[in-house]
Length: 179
Figure 1 (tube, helix red, strand yellow):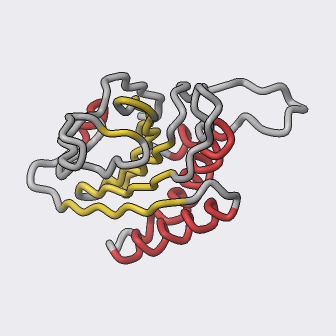
Figure 2: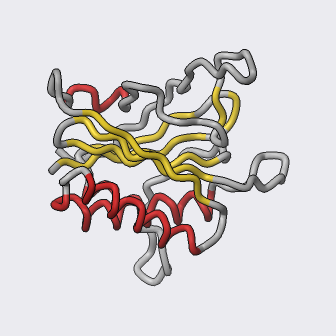
């Protein structure tokens, strides 16, 4: 089943360096056992688990770096069947983060995004964090518009996708692919 599954519960975990129970897009790492709530029904009890996270600067070259990281990670996990689809999903999500998520409401530009790949058995979640607060929007662009189909590509390649705000700022946009 393909479809957008927005998730609006704030992602929180313990941040010992600040003594608070909050994460932002700049310091979020997937907590052990993290999996998007709307995709929990996909998990098989006792399935293999692994994760890898890569920090990306807000530059166009980060799209290529993110694809390379995803390819290497999936190859290392023996999930080569997911590489082509994951490369497209990663490209679209990182591009969206660069275009729409790197400026905060007060106009400040932040310096990093994070790409996390979280494996649970034959399923892999790709999560991109950015400091922006606006929700990703699945648009229907006009035929002559030079873009706007990125989330349609993500939706067509993933089992499900969605997003969740990070507290106190930022968001994680995620997509689950299956081998």
